Every structure is written in C-alpha cells, then in structure tokens.
Length: 619
Image (cartoon, rainbow, N blue to C red; front, side, top):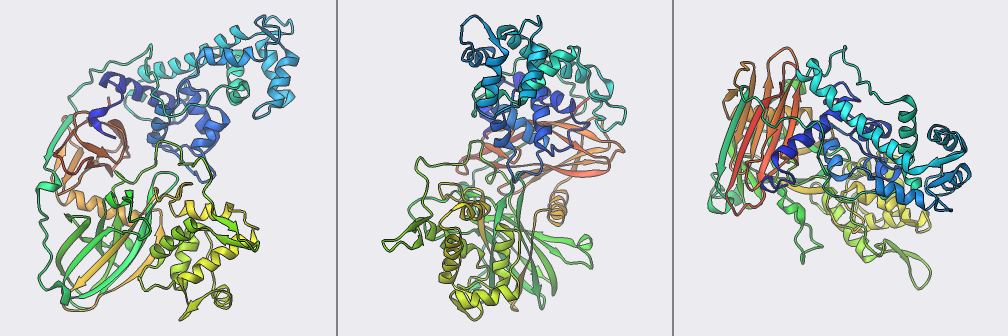
C-alpha cells in the first residue's frame, strides 16, 4: 500500500487500530498469540462488532489455513463492515408473511432450517425462547435486531473500556496470568441471542461484505496525542533506482570464470509467510566470486509482463558450522543491476548455505478474492475420438512449472527434483520403486523425466479421475497459480555463481517454511550494517534501521526482561510499500529478543522515495 494514500485520517487510523487491539485482547492474552481455529476467528470478529457468516469465515479460514496473526486480523477488519440494522430488517421482512412486524415460531423455523446453511430445530428453539420476551409465540424482529446490535456494540465498547482502564493492559503485559477477558454488562439472555444469531447470520440472507472501507467511529475513541517521551523518528530519503548505477560492477573477463547455476521459487503460504528451497554451496578453494539472484522469466507469456519480475530478491551466504546455529553470515547481495541482485568478493574454501530471500513487499496475499474467470478455464477436454487430453492453456502452464522445478536447467527432472514438486503439491515423496514404474509408463532419458513425460504423467492423473480437474487445481494452486492460470502467489528465481579459480557446486537442501537460519542471517545483516538507536527513555530498547541501495529494513532489539510493544507509524513516508501492508501497526517483542519490524521498498522505482518512521513504546 502507499503510505501517502492512507485510507483514513491519522486519528481515525489510530482509533481503528485501538479497536483492533481491544477486540483481540478480549479473546487472547497477547497480540503475539495466533488465531488457530475458525471458531477463534469468529469470536474476535464478534468482539470487533462484526457479524461473520459461515461464507465470510470460510473466505479467511480455508482448508489450508493453520493460523492468522494480529496483522491478519487487522486486515480482515478493514475488509468486513459491521452489520447494519437495515440489512437485518430486510432479511426478517422476507419471513414476515403478514407484514405486521412479527414472525411466528413456525415461520422462523421454516426459514432457518430450509435456507442457506441450515440450522437445527433445537438451535431455532434456543433463539426463539430467548428472543420471545413476551412469551406470546411471536418475535418482534425490529426489537430483536435492536437487541442484537446493542449487544454487539456493548461488547465492543466493553472491550475498549477494559483496554483503556486496565493498568496491566496499558503496560502491555498481555502475557500476565492475572489477565482475564472483560466482563460485559449485558444480560446473559442478550448475549445468548447474539451468539446464537451471529453463528448463523447468513440464514437471514444478510449479504457478505467485499473489500469496503469500514466506518471506524467509536464512542470511546482514544486521544491521538500520544506521549513522545519514548519515541524515535527515522527519516531516510532515497533516490530513484533509475538515477543511480549499481555499486557492484560485473568483473571483467567474467565469461572465462567457472559458472554454475540453480533455480528455485518463492512460494506465498496460506498464512502469508514465504518459503523457498535452501542450498549448499561448496567452494573447493579460495577464489573470487560473483553471485547473482534474479526473478526467472518464463517462456510462455512473452506478450504480457509478468508480475513476479518486479519482486525483490536477495541471497544470504552463511559459512556452515557444525550445527546450523553455529553458522555465521559472510555476505549478502546488497547491490542491484536491473533485475539482478549481486555480490562480488572473495570466498574461502568450504561449505556455505545459500539462503534466498524476498521482503514480502511485492509478493503478498491479494486483498481481493482469487481471480475466477466468468467461464471456467478448461484444463482437460475430450478429443474427437472421445479420449481425454490436456488443454493448450494447461500444457503451457505445466511447461512453465517444469521449467521452475528443473533446478539444474538440464531439461530433465531427476527423482530429487521431481520430489521437491511432489512435496510441494501433495506432501508425499515418490520412492525409487514408484520412479521405476514411471520409467515404464512415461518418457524418460537417463532415468530422468522429460518434459513430454511430465505432461504424460499429469494426463494420466486426469484420466484416472475421468477428467475431473479437482486434483489438477490443487497442484496448480500449490504452485502459485490462480483460477485464471496466472502466477500470482509465487516468484521463480535463478541463482548464478561465477568463480574465478575453481568450479563451485550447488545442492538444494529443503523446502523449509520455518526459516530460522534465514531469520538469523537477516537480523545479522541489519545489525552489522547500522548502529543502534535507543528509544528515548528506554535505555534497553533499540531500533536498527538498515539502508541498502534498494531496500530499508528495521529491527527492534528488546534487552529488557519483559515484553515491549512498539507502535510504528509510517504515515509520513512517501512512495513506499511495506512488508506489513499497513501504515500504522504495532510490534510486540518478547523479552531479550530481536525482531525484524518491517521492510520497505519504493512503489515506483523510477521516483525518489522517503522512508519516515516514528517508533513509540506504547504506555
């Protein structure tokens, strides 16, 4: 997002953020705690005054979702508006056969047990018994809507008041065992009605909300005048990439150096994290080295620009120790030459880890639903003879996938390369016996699968399902494609290693989604390139701000014995895209811990950009 195009004025943005925190802390003890179930997501959305339908919950909690964090929750709230009384009344009026403002038990039961996501008779009875205040067998639905929305509002206000009044929460000691969820003043009957109705709101035919800006007004809006005694302001003005040359030039005579290369891919996971293969580099003798990493251009879309070609990439090089924890950062690609990110220097003989990295500023989850064409893209079809075949569009995509998983670029897939694909798409590996069967049925050369064999294998899987494309879609989506066959949640890349004195070798290690080694290298790259600045009045909380040629990264070091929460405000930045996707957010840093705060890139690389960030300890 562009910071200068903040969707709300600063005071409203801050009020919105405080509402997010209040709702989150009404359910969890800490903003570091992840949402780990659809039920928890429903609870925090209800605390924020939302009325999530099953369809809404399923939009954000898919079968692949394992967790959502506080930042994810804030983004969801930006997209989901509060339920309005008019919407509820319209839904109830459809059930009101007589038009007298009341609905009977039988009318309610018929509507809720036969439409939408059907409720049970027991659930309907529970709602009706609580909502039929006069016990006359009729439900005054206007009063019911007022009661429901009043309950929702009181829950939200109560959560905010709890956050405002509780000294422990003000100090951000969210992990304190003495903390308990706020107690509301509404009656148990009202709460039960709200919970029962909110659990199945779509049966009243209330509409799901798409990406619309919500109203952030609140009767308990906090003051926007925060104390600045514990603030630190960082301002960095960067010139456009078009007006500066790379500091690292290509060595003369590079064409005569020993060259080896390998491919890989960044994958955007369901929880927003980014994973990729790691590699081991073996350098047989001390030599001059020229390293590059860049997004990989694929061959089947020359007529249209590929979105992933603008994704930033980097390569961290760590000298391998006896254990991964003993590994030490040697260098990383700081310079940029067009799409290439480069490093030049000497490497001693030994084994190194090559750790690909992208900031997440340009490879991130889309806020809109995945593209679904008006007419489904055809993956398989029947020929004139009635046999199944792969469509031209699918063959082009599979050819590109082959290009990505052919790591060494020899035009063939080894068992190891194929298994990286299998682990990514199915979670299972192909053993040597199964590989031998593949050799009998599909085109292979030198015990490796050809491009034609890869097509045949996918056609066989489609044929076994009698043309059902469901499994093919699972494969395509796991590889980063949407339903329009666009590569939107992945970025293929290529690493090139040039050595002057000897031939280096590269081996892939693992597709690891828990990048502890990469995080270690990233933190070291920031702290080793810039000095620490202490927050005013906080001698043991430091901010490191790394300014590279094309990226700004910040890190928070908490050397105290308790958690601290740092409020981060980027609203004065210009032409900036953050890995956080928010202009105002908070980072909760555990005791005695370092944590990367954010990465920032220019939105338009041809224009100058200004990183202006104010970090403040929340009181």
